[in-house]
Length: 148
Image (tube, rainbow, N blue to C red; front, side):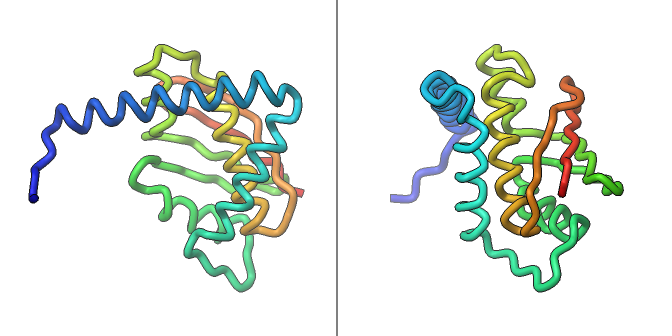
């Protein structure tokens, strides 16, 4: 059975994924409250161990470069590394598209949980604690990653 998927099939699938991510983010936030950051970061560290990225001497630059390449299908990341961490600008963002489809506030529960997850990924790949804060939301978004 070789059935071609139409553009409408893709739109319906994306709407379902957006619905499920919304449900997941709200449920985790409601159930975990202040522990939501830990849940996201643990999930990110776990996923980082499964990502086919090998960095023998990781630096913030090499980690963010590898993540930029790995996430290219859903995200356009433009990292700028500084002394205290990195600023990451998101051009295209699958999470932003989900929020817009669901009419959710940018920077709300779904975005925040995703950034906690990203903290965990960077933490595991870099082997250094990482904490993000959302600096700007809109057509492009920007976060600051504080790396210790």
